[in-house]
Image (cartoon, rainbow over all chains, first blue to last red; front, side):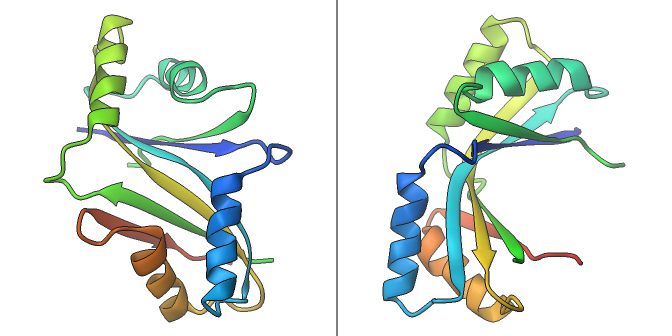
Length: 79
Length: 79
């Protein structure tokens, strides 16, 4: 069954307290090479039949993300 | 600055109420072609210098994920 991945990330101008908290913890633990952390959501969808890109993009942009504050990256199967 | 992506997904045997809720909503909205939804976390890290795969894998597996219930996918820059 085709697998479609949707990554939902906060828009760059939206502050990300979760990512900031992770970044702070990394700094305290000595991982100074990491300069920025942003946290988003990762959805894995099993889709029956040929994935319909338009339908999946609509699902991603309207149901999985909040378009006011989040951007969507849709990854269709490459095979 | 190199960008490293870490996707954290629940292990297959762990139930996923968030994914189930999304799947239920998709069904009610007529998107019957989606048969399964699993929700995880998506981290985007900006790393200074050449990414150290061993350090990043340790960060991902011990700080970004709970290894008891989650699996990690580490995506290093391909360039």
